[in-house]
Image (tube, rainbow, N blue to C red; front, side, top):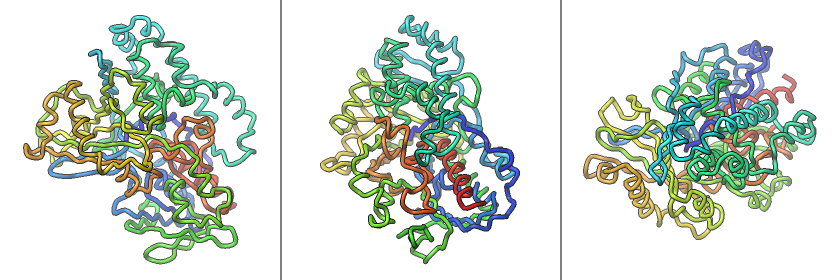
Length: 530
């Protein structure tokens, strides 16, 4: 899913801890449940500090929501595709005394993304402020004059969030009442919405849609998401400080492969097709996990799965009085995703690596998603041209184009039957893409013409990853309590049970769950006395 840059560059690991990598001095046994990027990051940092780590993944392949799909000569990254915050990824390898470029290579994207609007306007997002002003001025000179001021505000918000929200975990009131956090919280305008701040700079619906769409990077709505998430404009198209969007050679899944290779080199015991049935709790403490293949003893357990769903399956309510099912049910889920994997022979003109096709009334989409909780009648459509034109988009450089198309969808609910709706809605999306400029896409992706179509719904994501109600980011960020104080990274009731993933602090997205994995590893070792 188009999880994008999310929050910021993130702090680098303290030199003293980086120097302790591979010391082998703790010997602690840690079980990591789930092989997404957050779980892999946590496993790497624990192993680099000498822990004996067993990582258990129920699926045949690692990656969690990020997977590689190969079919009929086409290759897709199914899942997160917009990558930013390169220093966060570099730091994972540096923690183990390695260089990231020896495992996976990145290349910057410029232009970053292409936005097509209903009135025919096109904006290619770039870090070149003059070029951005010229493109916006083509439909709104007034908005163009406000662009640099908005980007300065975006950079300010990013700096505050990076310093106060990405530098450590928020586990209890002691963390919440930290003076610098309270001061930073006041300065990010917590009660103002993202949309309200946008409208203080811009008027035209195109500009409001282009920057308001960043709310969907945290699975939420611009009119409800806190203003701080305007930081994402700086993260994608700001001037330095780790800003910028990049692509990975071989596709986004190459990052999963690189993390897995490093983890194995550090001695992590990675077991796929190993489903965890229960987290063993002994005298109020996590003591290991029961799997299909037997019991794995551990001094601590890190759950890299959505706790909103996983706790119901793995821990009896009696052992978690602070998080009974009824409390979890009151949380609002983020958006889910309706995905088309589309393959066609040859090229399809007019596409960058990242593309967004906006409808005439973008605001109506969020009324559908969070008000009526229905599939949007006229949605924005994100299209990723897999591999950015490199051979990663097709198997063996076969001259085929692989497209990942995503429409935001409501989370699962009673009465919403995705299986019954998916074929008709897929046809609707193809028709909208045709109408918005991708002429011939329906015909060229027809399997009878050598093309490929595969439809994936929130039901598929829930089955494969255990995503709560099929939601991409777990809980939404539409409420300040859910945006700023997400699921605690340390369980309130069970000692030695930790969470590293999108529903936990600091949130979702490939770089942010990578940061989460490191923060959990560091704090876990502190509390174990290592």
